[in-house]
Length: 318
Image (cartoon, rainbow, N blue to C red; front, side):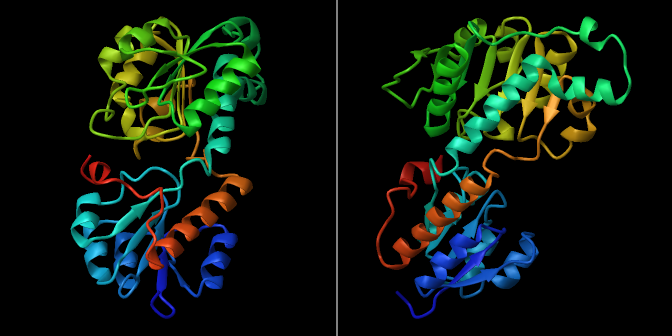
């Protein structure tokens, strides 16, 4: 390892990750903000970067002049310029599983909040609104069918929680996973949507998943379905979701990720939509695990060891 290599921390991480880097002789450089302009000013000479959802663009990768590893704090790497990293010989690593429990628990909470309309009920009480309980429709989740889209670390945990905790039947749509246990595998998305009372998204954003929940998908859903997204905003065509909500196809949606304009648009104005500010992996426990895992990925690469969480060549170009 180069003497005292620098690692740029694009967005704040848990202190345990900083300490792991320092104990390994790596100097953390903390960005005051994650804007591309600030990153460009601070990345020169850095051998490593740890970034969260801000990612890293091609200009920053080139400006480093020495970048060997981009450690993603989490699993989503769609905001990292992968072709630029590949051209520069820079390894991209993720931290799969580190925040899975926290994301799964949020998914469970959002699902219950939709089924019982908890945020809207809270607002009705605060507004001294009478008749809310009698006017609205609420449902149990026991005995209902949930479709899990993406059977990875998080999807499997969510499936287990829904099944064992709530007594739901679990379907899984995950074409890249050959062996699905604990759920009935469905080979066609629309066929699964037609059977599901609740749809929960846990798949990465890839060319084949970009906008996968579109007008055609909503048309396939059973009436009054619930939709939860704790994965990536780009999985859903938001205009199609707004139309489905307006016409009663979808009874409610909970989005932990969404486009920048969603809070002030039709989704933000709809009381049947719950918006949370990307809280999935934001618990003390998950932040500590993820920061530590990202720091260990940096250390491994700078010591000439490729972590088993490094992206494959196929993932760089997909």
